[in-house]
Length: 85
Image (cartoon, rainbow, N blue to C red; front, side, top):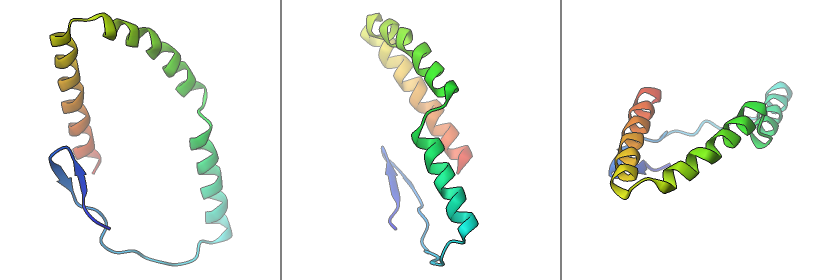
């Protein structure tokens, strides 16, 4: 794999691939995970519904405010990504 580029930052990607067959239990867990990720739960649906009014508010704000919020959000997401990795 190659490194992952994220707007000017390069994050190291895994360099080794370990190939071994998955057990039946692992395959079943993978299937459950895929199903759970592809079908949003109640929390995700409620979050999306709550976010719709916020989108309307965001569109009505002046451009400088929207840009400041965008920069702050991006900085927070980058920080969270660094902590997660």
